[in-house]
Length: 303
Ligand SMILES: Cc1cc2nc3c(=O)[nH]c(=O)nc-3n(C[C@H](O)[C@H](O)[C@H](O)COP(=O)(O)OP(=O)(O)OC[C@H]3O[C@@H](n4cnc5c(N)ncnc54)[C@H](O)[C@@H]3O)c2cc1C
Image (cartoon, rainbow, N blue to C red; front, side, top):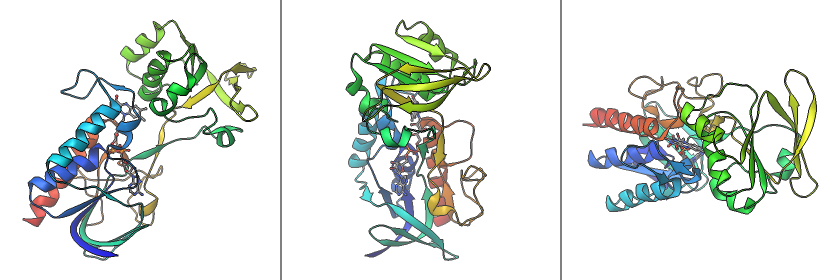
């Protein structure tokens, strides 16, 4: 199938959804595509306490609110797993697993995927005790012992969430200091069933058919020990979903998109929005910010 439109938005997380809302209001023709569920990573988040308008909301509830807003504005989300984006100078050919779309502008808002620990046992036991989504899988570990690996906001937030379901949560972190907000660290420290294991690096996930433990090594003493756990949740950062853009000279060393203030890359008409961009802070508010700026910039050029 072939279609033509003004703008293709790749990804329906907060960045893509916001871009869609702004383009719709500017009366610009566009196609919003995603290979999974609308809302993106928000669907995978336990509780969100830092998005204005909601003192406390679960990720899936906020994602549903986004979806309801799209429905109310009559904005459809089409299915599509984007494989390549080709620059036709001017314009783009966007190829998904289902169709080819020709567009004048592209907004890449395809976010990131969790970084792997890359230790023996991880791949084999993913789905058998290793999970990258506490909201999706936390319930499977009710009353059991789990380990969260990482020291950023996501790790601490998800450790707190898991502490409400499980008997015990180890937080394994390779340093003494945390990148997470102090408030989250303090809350975790005060939670009786969370135990911090610091200066420790995971070296292996053990278990035959199901996770039985995680082997860690102390960074300074090199002493190894194995903690008996039923579940392991790595939250050690992310890699950008920019595979379909890798032939363009617009990515930094880690593969994140380099954009200007108007969210456009050095390729005329190709924009980046949200976690996919090279930036300091990857949050819902910063993703929505980027989506709005990209859409408005396009609307100024179209009109
Ligand atoms: C555990 C966890 C907790 C978090 N907690 C918070 C919080 O409390 N507050 C906060 O503000 N932020 C939080 N975040 C961060 C927040 O979720 C992200 O910053 C935000 O979702 C980024 O939005 P995005 O639209 O850029 O990308 P995403 O939300 O990642 O959406 C990208 C979309 O693109 C789609 N996609 C990817 N590749 C393709 C492709 N090839 N073709 C088509 N579609 C594709 C994906 O399916 C996805 O739907 C958390 C993140 C995690 C992981």
